[in-house]
Length: 53
Image 1 (cartoon, rainbow, N blue to C red):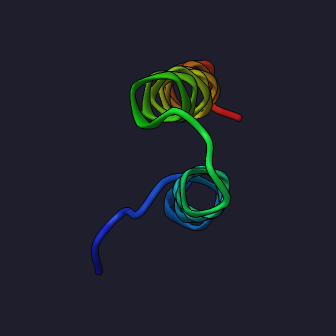
Image 2: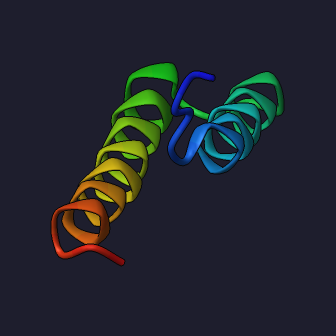
């Protein structure tokens, strides 16, 4: 099957950002923050995969 990595965690990050935007948050700020968080999750996942963890 497919390797999904941190898909669930990334979805939570994206949903939280959308919630903040819908509650008046600045879209550019919230999306940039969500992208940074998602990238950190992916980097951590990739590092663990490369180390065999």
